[in-house]
Length: 624
Image (cartoon, rainbow, N blue to C red; front, side, top):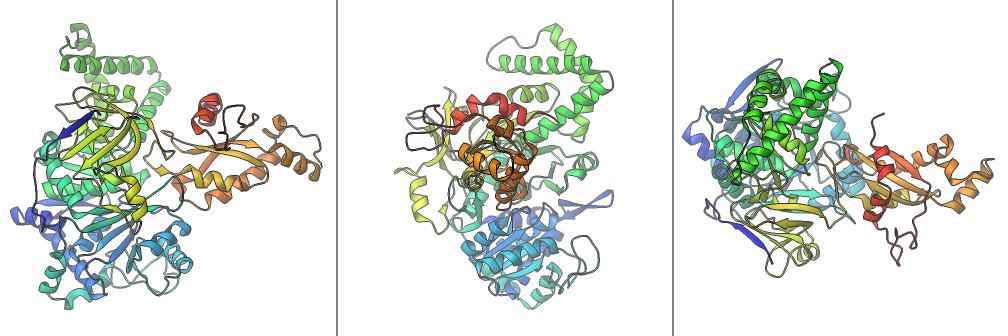
């Protein structure tokens, strides 16, 4: 059994917790700018002292509203400063953060409320409050869950989601919490804060499963804290550089984004937030981060946009030449790292030319000062990794799951192999089972699934390794490469985990649908391949005056497609926007045991369907 291990670089006392890291940073330099808030077109620094003051005020407010150590507090918001403030305040109150994606449906939120049983839900605006209140009614927790608006605007909710006049009864806000918490003594807050140790839960993060309801991953204070202090030592080139700063635009409901924000306040790195896709490019330009956490979709879009603009301006050939040069230069650098010759004089000359006339424009998209980025959540094209590296932006690709808190492997600055997901993080052991499954044990691995001992037992081996469900290979130097997915869980190009099973089951409820395969692995959105039930089609056609309609004709028939859209709409109503099926295509072929698409027990062979219908899949994602 092949295995790779990286020893823990920094250990922490078991009685401590994540909040100790913030206090340590504050005590070292209270005026250090930990955050930056955007006001109009300018950024205003928030010092460690100012942030800590706000954190303690909100934490006291939570305590005043009855939150006890160990209680759950949910947060539903886009990425913004107040999300981070609330997260840390929850920890100071000794409570457990339960993140909820801002795009979640009431159906999804209802299960989280029922399972995690949060005492308070912090929401960004009234629209999200309405979703939570709907979910609370569905879960029967209307009286047990308090909804507080996540804003610093005042003691009462002054406006609705669009900034207009209030709609419905006023909601309490963070300002309310701060005011109500004024009566809570410092000693009471300190007792709550210090009541948690490394082994205690810091967060319950719900992850999509392939079947059944989402499971809550219990992420401990130790998972977050040990990741933070060790990552700073493992990736010092960009995390410890002077005046390091980063812009967070990934959803803070994603555990990776929150783990990185712990790294930032532990290392005194200035963190800003950008919660709007429309605002992102401007925020990058004005804030000028020194490093970024991103997902492959960001790099894909920037590359595609740059290529398109070059083509439109008549410089398509120039861009293509610059791209070839960047990729060749990066590959040569990698070859030199393995004992090869490195870039030739001619290649160095071409690269130097493009580094004066074109690559700076690409770097300017990221703000002009980014030299390192970390990419995770889904696989990145090896070609794109070489392209950006050759253009002066290093992409350190890593691998992890919700259950590993953050990356369990990563390419470091000194040890990088493009195409791999790197070596184990400090305190982590990665091995391959006999069937090639990646198994992980270490500081970042979660404590188990919340209220689900059976699922927890199934997820771990007898000697304590977490079964990732992914297939991979390990080279002689300990670099891991992911070669496939043992599970059916899809990960889109934007890093969103999507369970296809429930969507497929919902689609198959429609009379015209025989089988449905939900797709989207590494793609920009979720799609579906649909096969029709021939008998049901005959019946439907007869009832609609369309007797004799063939499967081939039905696959392109506007009325049939409209009927199938109702099935898609019904399935989409059960999931968040990011998980919804945006396009579907009807296949003329049937999925049968004889065709190799169904097992003898009539279970779908997803990989076989996707492989045999690759052309249809490409057409589904073709530009329109």
